[in-house]
Image 1 (cartoon, rainbow, N blue to C red):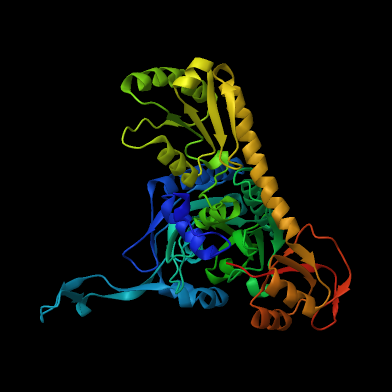
Image 2: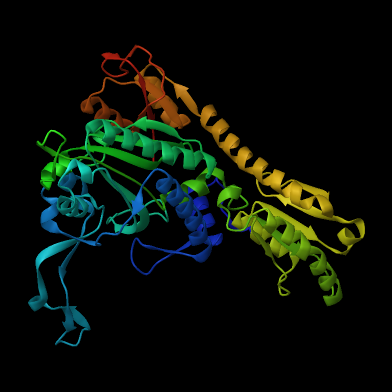
Length: 491
C-alpha cells in the first residue's frame, strides 16, 4: 500500500491527494468542486467537532441553527461584507423545473422565478444579525453567545479535498455584547480556544496573531488567526476569530437600551473553523507510508491483528486478545480486532499504516507461548515485544508519547524553517529557495503588502500577538516598524 503513495519530495500536492483518498478520508464527487467525506474521515471530524463543542460550551456558548438561504438584499447592507463574498456566492433564482418541450430533459421554469433571489450560505453574519434585532431590546438580553454547526457554500474555482471545496462543513460562532471591551475579550478568548485545540488535540503547533487590514475578514474591525506550517513550508490558516465592532449592528439596526436608558448599537464577534482542519492534520503529521494521526483524534487508537494458520490457532489467539481489549476499553482506549480471514497479516499491517492507527498489536501462537505481544507505533514505526500483563499500561504511556512526539516533531520543523530577514532581497531568496515562515519588518501599509504579494506570491500571515517588540525598518520603504510580521506562501 505504501508504494501507492507519491513521495512528498517528488510531488507534495499529489502525496496529499493520495493520502486523503487511499486512507479513506474523502472522495471526489459528481458535483464539481465538492467532496464526499467517507466514514473514516467523518469519524475523525466527529472527534474534532465533539471536542470543540465541549470547549465552546465550557466557555458559555450554546448551539442554534439558522437558515441555509439568505435574502440577497441582506448582503448589500454591509459594504465590505458583500464585496468580500460577492465572487464566491451561489445564488438561487428559481424554485421549480419543468420538462423541456424540445425533449432535452428538464429546464428552469421561468414562471417560477423567486421574487427575491437567495444566497446559499457562505457565512451567516447577515441572517443572524437580522434575527438578533428581534432578540435584543435591553442590556439584560446581552450577551448572546451562539454557535452553529453547519455547511456553507463558497464557489471556489480551484479546489482541493478538505483544503478548499465549494461546500464544506464548519462551525461559526456569532456573539452580541454590551461593550467593546467584552466583544474584544470574546474574540481573543475564542482564538485561544482554537489554539489550545490545535496544540492539545491535533498536536499541531500554531502561532496566534492579528491579520493585516488587507487579510481581515470582510466586515471585521480586527481578525485574529492561528497559523500553522505544513511540511512543505507553506502556511495554513487553521482558524479565525473576528471583532466586528458595531458594523453589523448598524447594518441591521440592532440597538439596546443600556444601563443609563440610552439606545446604543450592540458590539459583535464571529469565529469559525472548518473541515480544513482535516487537511491540516494530514499535512502536519503524515509520511510516505500514509496517514499519521495523533491518538486523541484517532477513531481507532489500537488495532489488534491475529497471526494464525488455522482456525484452531485463530481461536486461541482470539481468547488471548479479548481480555486485552477489555483492559484497554476500561481505560477509555478505542480498539479494533481485525480477524478478517480473506486478508493476510502483511496486508492488514499496510492498511493500518495507511490509515494512521497510532498503535498496532500483533498476536500469534509464538507470542502466546512467550506470554508477549508485538507492539508497533505508527509515528516512528518502531516495534517492541511487551508482556501481555503489561500491555494496558504500556499502551497508555505509548499513546501519550506519540501525541507529544508528533507535536514536538512539528514544532521542531517550524522552528527550523522560520527565519528573520532584514532586507527585501533576503526575503525573496528565502521564499524562493527554502520557504517557511519569514519574519520581516513592514511599514503597516496596504501598498507595501500588495507589492510583496505581487512579486513573491507571499502574504502576511499575521502579526504575532506574542511577538517581541523589536524596532526596525520596513524592508521595502525603510519606514519605522515596531514588530516583525510573518510572511509565507500559503494554502
